[in-house]
Image (cartoon, rainbow, N blue to C red):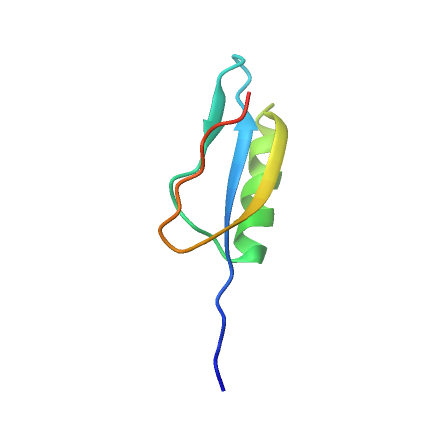
Length: 61
């Protein structure tokens, strides 16, 4: 039996208009918690994105 681990990262727009992306990977629950914290801080266009191990997301914006 093979266990597949799914990683997630986030991209968002900071309150100052700067496009940002996480450089760490999260499990799904942690990614959703991070998304909630970013939105509460005034960030917009927050997206949870499935990533591959070692993949770095590019900021969208």
